Image (cartoon, rainbow, N blue to C red; front, side, top):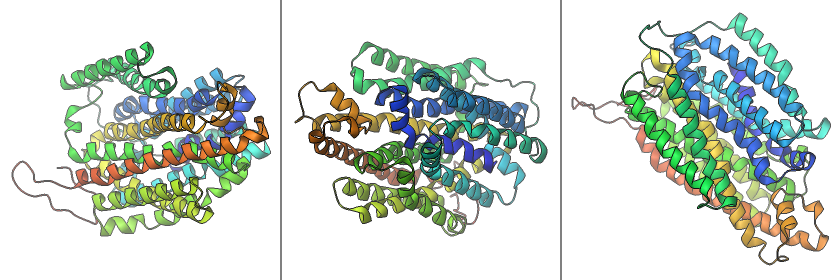
Length: 489
């Protein structure tokens, strides 16, 4: 499970340090480059609901292995992509396979480590999160030594080994067969359409305009598809079980996971571009400069299991968001010229905060539902993670573009090539006289992104209260049991 988690999480972030090389090699701009990140995250999140429900019915290991097979084939297609369109399509296929791998993860861990669930989830979260943080380093090594295509091709032999290991070492896990329940195909299609319609305006709105016909049509479709999805769930047997959504702990964990991914991985693409562009660092050096983030994540993650025994989930999650918020403020100051020491402090706080947030949320998600519904609950909660990443890239991309336009206002009028070169960090394409302006505008845009993400962290601190137990309907109060997984209200 950890090997699969490493691959899925690594592919969220490994492409970030390769964005400049991909844009240069395939002749594309920031909008298309963002889709190489967003296509994976969006497809990943769009299928998690269906994959989680499917794993409860036909077997969680079966879904895991099938997803790994699709992911491996799509990785080969990414590495061989001839143009940006083919790369984006292959990244979407990667996301679909990744969803099938990731959706049954918590359910498989809960079944295999009954009685040691919190420790197993904390260990898994540590390994997967470290892989995500190490993505820029791994990506930098491959881009520097072999070229950006190898960040995808390396998945092929690893994927084959993971499939072989799963078939020989992983026990099958599934809920008892229920002839009355079936996979909700219309609901699955509605979920995919809803998430696509939700994301499209966020990506295209900044450039096309928020009142552009395609943006308004997509936003309207999002509302209609969302209403239809919920209505199907209320009739019973739908993809989304409304009774699960009524569990405050589960919905709180899903919301907080969305905010945590939005404020962390949503910023990472702009962080790596800022390091690589304004400081003229190579992909490898950029990855190495992010080691304080990775190191703090690993060190803090080693103590999360002990912290979960001493503190309630809402306290840990609030502290994690507070640490991330302070780290983002420090990075904003570094973007404004505060110095490398401030930057390192910001990276350390950002990594430590992420290590503390996710294990408690995963434990809440699994502990809030009956054992036979853990696959569905896992898929529902996990769907919010990649959606948070994709939304962060889109929303912060809008913030970045708006601030960049303001910073370049003093540049030559109508200099579209200037903006295109700056937004992808390709300052070497500019006249030397324009490079100081370009770097200043880029740093200002990065600072604006960090400040916006810090506000999201503040919202996360407040929203952590949803994880607190509340009195039951019978009037009895739910006692917080620190050493164990939290109970649903």
